[in-house]
Image 1 (cartoon, helix red, strand yellow):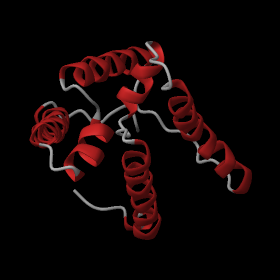
Image 2 (cartoon, one colour):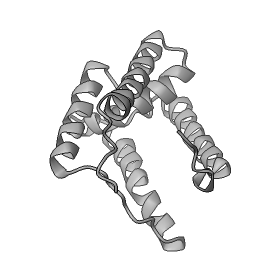
Image 3 (cartoon, one colour):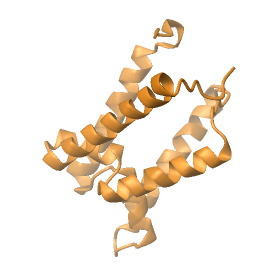
Length: 149
């Protein structure tokens, strides 16, 4: 294993982390809501009175921020090393997992851990552990290198 040092971007990663942390803290402190994507989107499917505005603003920010970024800098070329069937299965598995875990990685990993939630610690350890196990099995046991040449 080696690190692609030319792709290592600590300052932009740090800035992104600070922005995500600040936004999550502001949402919980000013609105009393958790910035978990699955919960935000799920609340739009069955909206409660007074809940639609902030949820729509949140989703529009998620969609709009990259569009604004694209005005100032070229978008990177997408490289997806999977076929449509693999993407659909992966998406369904992620959706089922977020329902079982009562939240997604952003809700548990960013917001839950910062609130010292034991449930979020267990969920985040499960997310990360399964990610590590999946990569290990695919790369080292099955010797799968993806669809890249």
